[in-house]
Image (cartoon, rainbow, N blue to C red):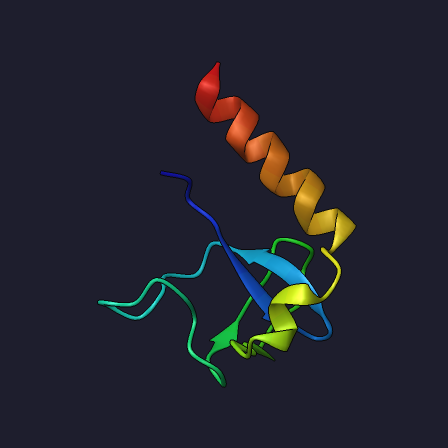
Length: 72
């Protein structure tokens, strides 16, 4: 399991290391999250459409480095 989770917010899919609420697999809509790209206090949007937003390139690169460091 990775220490980050994907979350739609601010019109893109971002990665966050913030803990998700207990018993959930996603950040519920309206949850304030910080992202790997440096956005702070962004509201999660867990709507179906939001999951089709483009992936934040900065979050993707940082998440990839984290994942790579855990598999080597």
